[in-house]
Amino acid sequence: MTASSSTRDRIVSAAAKLFYAEGIRAVSVEALAEAAGVTKRTLYYHFDSKDDLIAAYLDGRDQPNLTLFQKWFAETEGDVATKVEGIFRNLARAARHPKWKGCGFLRTSAELANMPGHPAMRIGAAHKKKFENWLRQSLEVEGIDGAGVLARQVLLLLDGSFAVVLLHRDPSYMEAAGMAAASLIRSALSNR
Image (tube, rainbow, N blue to C red; front, side, top):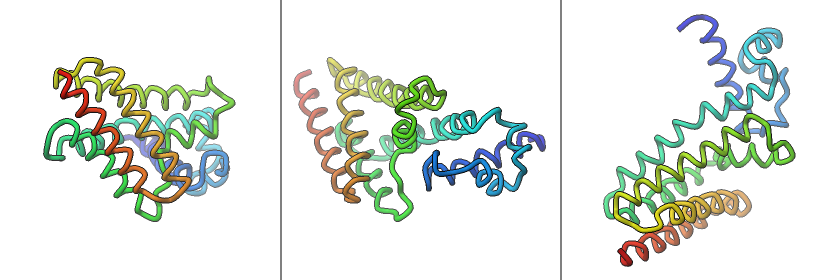
């Protein structure tokens, strides 16, 4: 790893912590530079703008989040419906942590709702689509007809549960969404 990539990684790491904890608009470039232990000039050497850094923050969350969901799915014992419900149960467990702030992709998209062309919006949309496609493929392996629509329904339950848990600070909503997702999948399995 070069010193330049190390500095860039340090900036992204600091941004990830601050953006997730406080929101992207609440964090100034000065605060980002200070948290990363660099000057603003160094930050701008690595990133053309704060918007580029926001995009890098989300890009850095993409694969780790997908890998975690796939891990929870694989580690849950039972049929595909139970495995999907396991994702929701694990998210509910994570949501019980006092520092949990929800889905970084959804929170960022809410802050950038008036900027649909923002690079972070494209990264967030691509992340959600990757999850949906992975889930569709997992359902297709089980021989479920309409796996694409079903995967989309589960994604809607997942993202809806993120929003409601943030509002109520009650992770049981995520568990209820997981039960609904499992019910939809079991219904599809019985119609094979």
